[in-house]
View 1 (cartoon, rainbow, N blue to C red):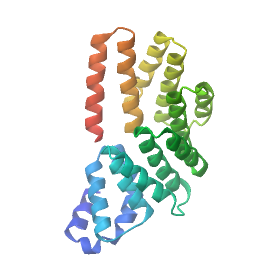
View 2 (cartoon, one colour):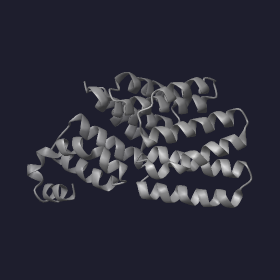
View 3 (cartoon, rainbow, N blue to C red):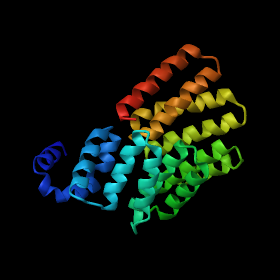
Length: 239
């Protein structure tokens, strides 16, 4: 991809293939923390006046990781509404849902995650949509967390990310029940799966919760080290 990008930047007038490149490599680049590379592809695509949904999705992902949540929500929502089909639409809905969630627009986040579930084709996209709904349930404190966890567990896509999030979900249920030590056990299991996961959001959420649970059970030195690991992970993933 680096060689392709170098050629494209040297000959931008021939860069009509930027959309196809993003289709092929967007997820790989994001998983590897190469947000700056995605941003350069988006700049090239926009310079060529390309308006394909994948370009908007890539731009939304970059905005989300840069903390520009309202922009990510707008771009993701627009990409999802452009007659896109299958997982491209679901991925756009997921970006919009995550942006709304991080901007504390919970009702919007819930709606986007439900839409992402409906439009998902792959098990991975459906699981991610169900996980978004679970997180909103947890923060709403309106009940239904255990049921949301059962639905997520049943949507096993065979990835390490799913196992990590499942352990994270059990930790949230344990905290809801007031069982801090069981929550600590689940948090440890989730963190142990981080090296196997390529999803920066799943990894950082697990690391953050692990640090919080350590502090909650009075293991303050370990909590500080866990917090440092979380910060390092955020920097490495481009968040």
